[in-house]
Structure formats: C-alpha cells, structure tokens
Length: 191
Image 1 (tube, rainbow, N blue to C red):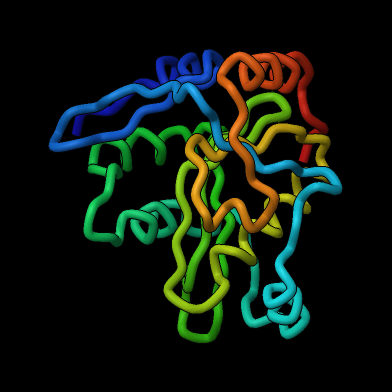
Image 2: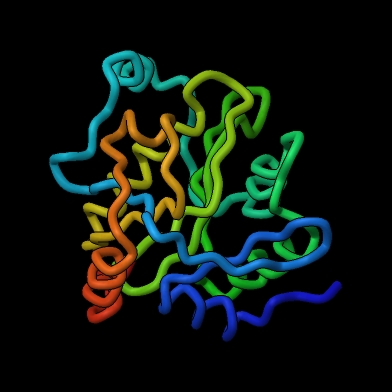
C-alpha cells in the first residue's frame, strides 16, 4: 500500500495544508477560512453534554486502538479516509505524531477522534460516534489534555454546526497561519 511519507505529511501541517482522498486521488487543502476551537475560557460545553459528563457513560482512553478509531471515522456514506490515508496516519501514530481519543463502554469502542500533534498544535482530523455524546466527550477530554500540556491551537480544518456548539469559529487563513507559527515556535510540555 502506497503511503504519504511522514516527512511530507508533517511538512504540510507546518504550512497549514492537509490531505484528503477522493476516488483514489490525494488532494491537498488550505481553506481560505479555517476552523478552530478555542482551548481557553471560550471553549463551551453545551448544557446537555455537561449532564452526560457527570454520568460518565464512557471510559475515555488515549491511543489504545488508533486504527479502529480511524476506521470508525471512515464509517460513513462518503469518506475521505481511504486505505492510503489510513496507512499514512497509522504510520504517523507509530512515530508518535498522531493520536486518538477513544470512548469505550462495556460493548467496546463507541466513539472518538484522531489528529496530529506538532509543537503546541493539535490538528483534528475526524471524529465519530456510535452512541450518544461519545465523540463530544472525546473532544472535551482532548481540550482538557491540551490545557494541561500547554497546547494552544486546536485546528478543525473546516467548521461545522456540530463544532460551533463548542465555541468553534472560522478565522481567515492569514490569522490561522500566525497562530500556527506561534504554536510551532515552542515545544509543548512533555506528556
């Protein structure tokens, strides 16, 4: 299976560019308006999710089954995660640059997200839920971790209504590139 080399992938992220697959081809994107979620006090946990968090419906784990998390994200009618993307990011995971946040219950993996870390940035790639609030709880845990480890940029690439409920917003590419440069200037606190 052909892969995108880690060097090319990581280099693209440092320039604000990310890949997506469509019909066997890899396309590279740098949106004019970039989706980001603030990790400071502007991060918003919706009221209903706050109730769910108190019940602790899932055991949140990190990097237990990165591949299964990616495959969960690909479980949809239209997906940009093909075998080349899957294998490329699994290799980044093996090298310590890609991470998954996973929500489990007694029946197994119920949701989560994955992305890439460089410096003080987390580049969110995709998320999924098989049961209510699983991806949202993974996102809340990601933001908690980012705060604890000095990360400052949570890049969502595109903005959706789902992400807006957390305080997500779109910013112009120029502003995003400045934030990215700041996030990459210093290394984050070690895990």
